[in-house]
Length: 153
Image (cartoon, rainbow, N blue to C red; front, side):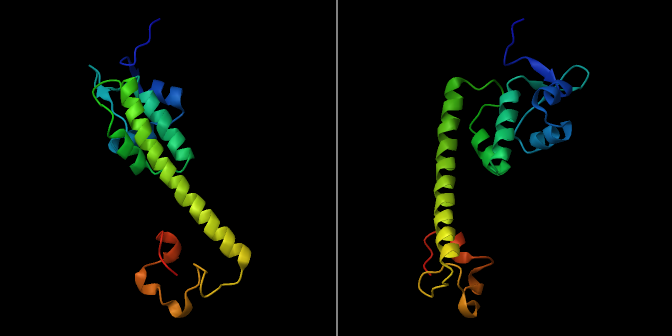
């Protein structure tokens, strides 16, 4: 049996193949992450190539990548046909840049927190968590020095 990326699957088949509940598929569709069509009986059917998108959504969720980031990356993919190898390469390069930036931010935060928690000194000159007299309260909620890279203590 020849399988084509443009073959269609029922929602039940997509649920069985991906393990993603139908309600989540409807949600992803409303968010523009995946697309379906209607058959002659007005049943929702999905092009087989949507399985790859759904798989990437599952991976992104496991990596705590927001669906808004996934949508941004998927915006570069065609919706009327199966993406080509070149389409996926272009999207992959873009996503790689986003992931590299996230990695840099996480590594920087890890270094800051390890130094701060490990030190315990609450140095007035170096500690990014210290906020005497709540002088940073006007800059917004949370640990503003840690949330805004490059913010001076």
